[in-house]
Length: 500
Image (cartoon, rainbow, N blue to C red; front, side, top):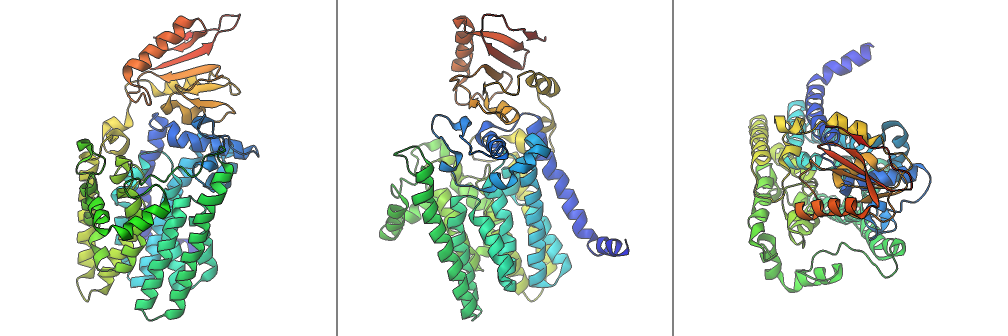
């Protein structure tokens, strides 16, 4: 007990920071899930995957039917397999809890790294608060679960143990990053190159070579996954689907060649809206501005960390899908640890005013993050999902408790087609489709009050309901102002539940 008391006393300020931000993060991710602000794509997909893995079978990716027959043919992520046993304990909260704990673990990794670098406890704690204030964490938490968020939180630990030359732990976190998702393996290539560059700058040739070995290993794994493993799991004739960089080429090889063959076009694409739709003007500029305010200016003074972010920047701004250029969702999370480590590395190199500059940088980051949560250029921003300090985040315009209660009326073994916001709560079953894909479903579950009718618009959504009821094949099973559950008609009339 004395040791525990001394440990708490020694790390009291760190514990306060971790607890404070843990409460904020919990109020975003868990409240969103309870309030039906999580979705079939991507939380539902992961929920259905861990359900299958927990029952010792491959996931047939019902939510992505008919495009895929195995979820690993979309993104090769092994995290759901590792986490799946916890499905039996935490249910629909499993993946969100895993991500939540990973972010806290990543923050502690930042503390350990900066403490190792500076030997200054105050600066290390400021760095943790700065990391937890980074806009990309809030954007990621506002939108479901994603493997790259968890993988990003292992990066500080990988860098820390590499610096300490603790090769067993370095390899452990390196592998954890690789198996998250194939693009995390590509990122690991540049993490290795960045570490090699840093080691050369420090005149440590032996460690630089080890950094290159890590980069080569990551590149081999990346190519193996996208060229061999994913195509072998995919529907016949279908290869890796995420070559979404047609402005530079139809595949990764063409993209790489064109970057070097057409450098001026490449530089232009870094800043311009190449979609042709003026609705997406300014999104890239907003991203760069947000990164700079969060501490990214340090990347110009610590080029080893800029090297590490080359593939992250490229996969964002060269992408065919404009929403990925911006600061929404999980598309900025990888910047968080690298920007913070770069900034506090630069602060450490200064001869004076270190603590003052750390506090000032933190203040700017907090101000910019709050400003970004209130106002942004990026399209389709889900404000109520992110702004944990607003009443709108905590409430819905319908009885959430009632919807949860009524969803339990659907039998656990029933085949269901559900609207996106309902899927994460219904995905622990063998057959679950993303509405309007119905196929052989026995129930259709619709959240009428949800403004997001994706992939339908309001008119087609309402027309489809009318068509189902007019067909005689479907009967009302549950009907409230917020929820509609249809049951496939049989010879016997289904018992209906109607609540005004």
